[in-house]
Image (cartoon, rainbow, N blue to C red; front, side, top):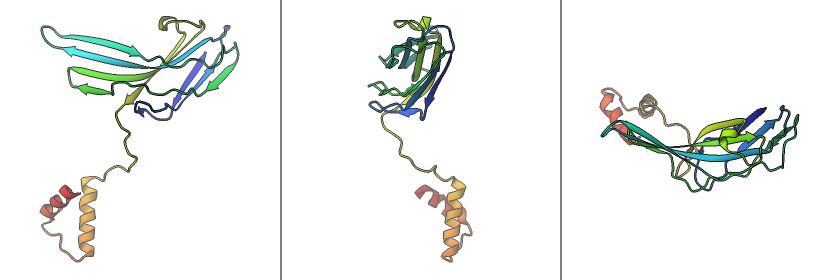
Length: 175
């Protein structure tokens, strides 16, 4: 049994479609009748008083199943399920106290109505769930790049950059 889960990005917002591709190569002697894709939200709580303790709580979304009845032995099936992020608490962390993470989970098995403990293949990929998408923009320039840009523009304008540490720091605050 070979299974692949392809994900083109890792960050999502609720309501967004997850662009995922699934490939299942069934090289076993049985038909695969179960493939289920879902999101698992894991909340971890940490306590220090009265004694150190950790408690984890997992919540699994309903997800989507295999779109065909079965994958016969010796066959390969590739598909892209239509799966949207449900309304979930976004990823966050209160350092040393509380942490919420999410991961995409694909379970594959021979029995149609099986539980996780009977899966023959289990793939988990960490994902990020936020409240808004990050705009596509180039990375910010380093402090050195900003200072050299100021020096180059001042030189072109005929200004002196001597004693420029004060000028450069003022420029960096504005930049």
